[in-house]
Image (tube, rainbow, N blue to C red; front, side, top):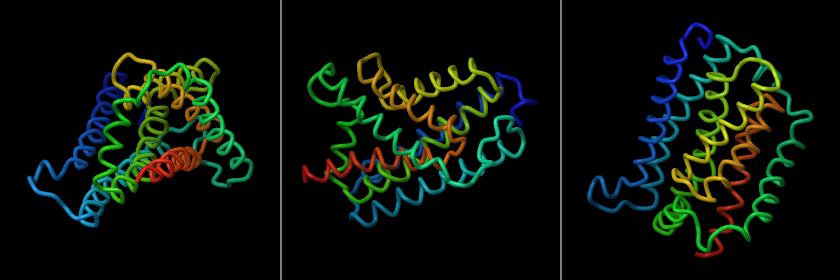
Amino acid sequence: MNQRRSLPGRIGIFIALVFIQNLSTMIMGIEGLIGRPLSEIAYALVISLVFLAVMVYFIKYYQGQLQEYNPRGFGENLSFKGKVGWIILTVVGIYAFLILVSPLLPQGTAENQQVVDQMFLNHVLGVTLYGAVLGPIIEELLYRGIFMNFFWNQKGRMYDVLAVLSSGLLFGLLHEPQLSLYLVVYSAIGVFLGMLYLKTKDIRCNMIAHILYNGITFLVMFQTL
């Protein structure tokens, strides 16, 4: 799949997948689209069905990539032996980094986080399901798994560095699509997750680490209710 397609073809397909992911997030504003409020359960059910559909599609696409062309050996070792420590180290590393840079950040929160906070107040269950579980899985499949196998599937230190930095920047732009210190912070988080993927070669480890990171964030948000 990845070897036979031209670079413009791969770029076009990846842009289409990013479009699908971004289009699916519009369901978070379904109440505005239909012009009436939904109950907590109804809202959670609707967005869960949409994001589950996207997640399943991305999983199948990712698995197809690996079956077609996988010189790096991603997903071949399904054992978690030796991987749990790297998951924990990644999450701890992210929070240690955030603690170090927090004095440098402007007061308040990033625009992306402000939107999440407001939606969280309106629909705790649905936003938590997406933000703490479904969103991280989808993002790891797309911005680590699919992206790296599309553009950086050759072996070599240079490709490793470029894969981690570029996937980190994409992750940063997803959460903060403007030049700011928050873009640097989100990109750095993406770099941590990119290094985890190259180290473990197991996208499940990335999903778990991302869920743990976001889950802790949501636990803090629950304290504000």
